Amino acid sequence: MADWLGERRVEAAADRILDAAETLFTRHGAANVAMNDVATAAGCSRATLYRYFENRDALHTAYVHREAHRVFRELGDRIAGIADPRERLLEAVLAALSSVRESPSLSAWFVTTERPIGGEMADRSEVIEAMATSFLGPLGADDVEARARWLVRVMISLLTFPGRDPADERLMLEEFVLPVVAGDDSRVR
Image 1 (cartoon, rainbow, N blue to C red):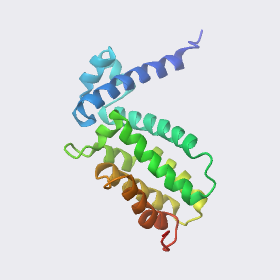
Image 2: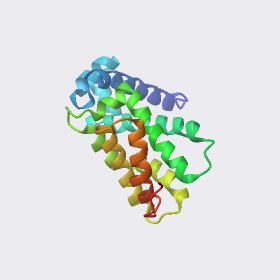
Image 3: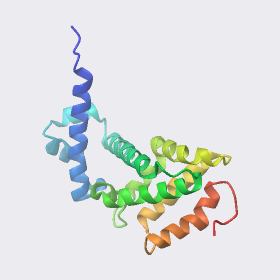
C-alpha cells in the first residue's frame, strides 16, 4: 500500500529544516551557517539533512526560492490595483526592496561586512529572474530576459548600498531604471 502522506511528510520535513535555517541565518548570517548547525537546530541528523539538501548551496537555493515566492505573493497583493505597467513595476520594485529589508532573515543576506551571498544567490536564481521577467512583460520591451537580469542586479545593488532615503531610491528608479527596463530612453521626469 502506498504512503498517501509521503509527499506531505517530505514537504513538512523540508519546511522544518528551512525554518531552522532561517532562524540561524537571522542570527549569524547565511554565509556563516554550517550544515551541522542547521541539522542541530532542526532536530535532525546530518544524514537526514543531506537527504533533503545535498549541500549548503542546495539549502541556500531552496530557502531563497521559498522566500522569493513569499515576497512575490505579497507583491501581488500590494500592487493589485495599479493598472499602469510602469507604475506597477516601480511600486513592485520598491515593495520588494522594502520586504527584504523588513525581514531580518533576508536582510542578513545583503550585509556589506560578509560575503555577498544574497547577491550571488539572486543573480543566479532562475526563479527570481522569472519573477522579474513577469513584471517586465507587460511593458512590451524587447529582450525582456536581459532587462530582468539587469533589474535584479539593480535591486541587489540597492539592497547592498541603499539610497539616502526612500524618496532618493524612488527618484533613481524613476529616472534611470524604469526607462531602461521599459525599453525607452526618455526620462520619466
